[in-house]
Image (cartoon, rainbow, N blue to C red):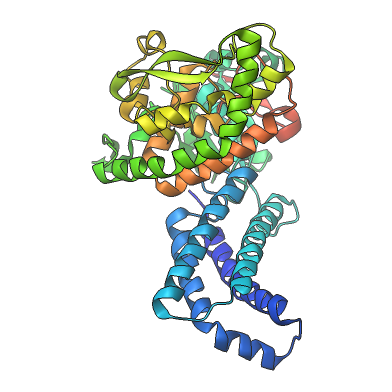
Amino acid sequence: MRNQRIPFWILVVDLLWVTLALYLAYEYRYGFVVDFATVRECFSTFGETWAAAMLIWTFLTLVMRLDGFNGGWNFGAVVSDLFVGVFLLMVLLLANGYLTRVYQSRLVFLCFGVFAIGGFVGIRCLARSVLGSKRFGTSVRRVVILGGGRIAKELASAIMRHPEMRWQVIGFLCPNSDTNGLSPADEGDTRKVRALDVATSLKDQKVDEIIVAMPNPPKQTLDLVAQCQRSGIRVLAVPQAYELYISRPMLAELDGLPLIALGQYELPAGSQAIRRFTDLIFAPLLLMAVLPLVLVAALTLALRRGKAFRRELRCGKTGKTFWMYRLNVDRKLPALSTYERLLMDLGITEVPQLWNVIRGDMNLVGPRPESPERVKHYSDWQRQRLKTKPGITGLAQIHGLRDQHPTEQKTHYDLQYIQRWSPFLDFSLVLQTIWTLAARVGKPDVKEPAPSPSRLPSKAETKLEEIAYVDHP
């Protein structure tokens, strides 16, 4: 459903910026003299580097999906992904220059990298601004969601994260029996109309598409869908049990009946070896970098609480138990000192888990490990989290979910991570973790769970209207 033209045009603008960034780096190194002779001299000297950069960035953009909208717009994720992409670009350019014996000025090379990432971020922010602007030439598709439960809320939230879709949710529709799917605050704004009047109302409001987001839709919903199709309104449907589709579905058809094949996914042995190799390189480096800070924190905690570290029993891959280490700060206490709260907000309490990574109990990135008591109550769907080693950080954590949040919420993100895993994703999530920790500092501690993917947008965000329709007499 993604608009494929947007990633294409972003790539085209990226390649134009690669050309301009190389020229600006050359000008910065040798003095700003803008004329045709300077341009010719620049690309005669760095022509092979420019050609290699164009090819490498095209490849990285297609493989890593660096258009900025993959998975929903998020500024921290965009910057992190681009940082990883530009870093790989620079490494490959250095390798190309070494192998081909092409001269490369180090200052030009460094400036090119800085200009490149700054321009790439700016291009995507501009695209986000243009796509979100009401003055944008492409018309916005007005969408109504049929359903008022969790699936409908997740769908509305996902649409908000994808401005490139040019969809605007203008309301919800749900049969009278389904109004209990709305939260109490929303029920007060619900108005009831007859089913016969709904199609006319949708046409009057110039609705372009309706999305059926309810299991086992009743008869009046099926009638409404048929009426909408006759009125020229496009109809889409969210399949039942959609949570299963994290297992990489394939669509098949039998006499017009759609079938979805669900395959099991296992991380290949080669990918596991890459993860382990990466962990053994970066975990000791990270540990040495933060060791002075951890020692100071440990000494302070030892003086205040009598013990610097604590260990907790956790379940790893396939449910195998291990001792997970952290600084001796009990997050369950009702009142923590400002110092201890700061250690938690900055994630310093979790740094000792780098030792777990070195030992092989954990990865740097992965689902957060949970206690055997909690794992004992996992459903079969939730047990899929145990297919891979747990991590210090992960996709759920950068979305604000922590140890105290329900496993159900975290499982959605953890299974997405398992399906999408790549070395690029791990590097990006580490950088996004830094963004998340920086944003957390100074905020008051919230005991309630953070908003899940099923959060219903507020009226101020989307000007939604809930309508419960009843069957005609």
